[in-house]
Amino acid sequence: MQAVDATGAFNRIGFASARQSHFRARKIKDTYVHKAVSSDTNILLVTPARNAAVDGLLSLTTGKRPRETSTFVPSKRQLPISPVGSEAQTPATDTESLKSEKEVPLDWTTTQKKHQQEHRTMQDDHDRTLEVENQQLRMQIESLQRRRRLCSYVRPARENLWNVALEYFRVFRNGLQCRSQSSRSQFELLRATMAPDMAFNTGQGPEAMIKSWKCISLWFQNVELELEGMERGPTGLLVASTTTRVTITERTLRNVFPHLWVQTGSYKELAEKLLGQRIVMRGSIQFEWNPAQRRVSSVIAQSDLLRPIHSLVGSLEAVMQVFEKAIISPNFQWRLSAN
Image (cartoon, rainbow, N blue to C red):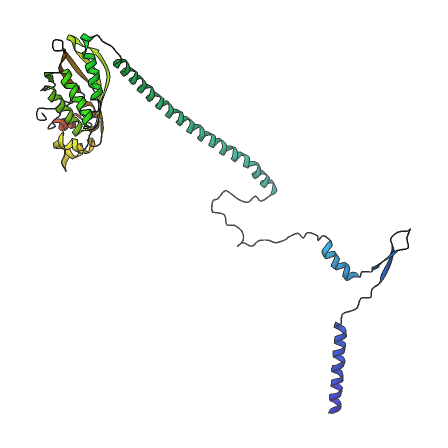
């Protein structure tokens, strides 16, 4: 039994030594090669010889590796999913790819033409806007020049009515003013130029004119009286062409058209059509001069309120409903109830 154990131990020792010798690193014997540097000298360089293993390592660091051709084919999960019915597809051949590249400049040209067309359209719109604004400016310039000619028109002293009329339009351009200085100048003009028993529309005296202007200024908003022209009328009258602008507000409906200020019915619909509207009226004012008193003896003012109201409400029947209980007439004169 001991002999067998000794034999087994000997065999194990022999196998271990053989295994160690198999995995022991082999020693590379250095071989040297003599290389002459110059024929004039006897100096020699000793270069160690390289084996195949060293040459393989050097080839990995210095040599260029050949490019490998990839044969990878993407799976279906990696491919982009194109929408159903989409016309954009990946070209199958190089010819199709070249054709698609040639079509790109055509799309760019189309886009450029579209941008140019939009630019021309914007430029045309801008030009039209400028033309409209220039036309409005020309009209304003003509109006101002006409007013300047009227203001600078000098008449003899015996025809002082022209000066009175021009001053009247200057001080009452925006109605009766609430400021003390402006209202004082208006009252002084009437006392200095109007006869005490003068006739003004349906009233008499400068007080009737003041009351009329007071109602207009309180019950309408943004009052403007513009002189368009003046000319000599029959029997010594001076006729002035005017444009009057007012805005209808809730105060206008409550005081001037009280029957429209209701919550139901057709009157409510009429009130909604008039509320907030800017009214432009063409009219005239006639001045009559008393040469003996050298004052104005009569002033008759009227403006066409019927036409703008008709354009807002749409029918003559509706116009009749607007004016049937109003305290102002279609020619923009106050009725007796307002006085």
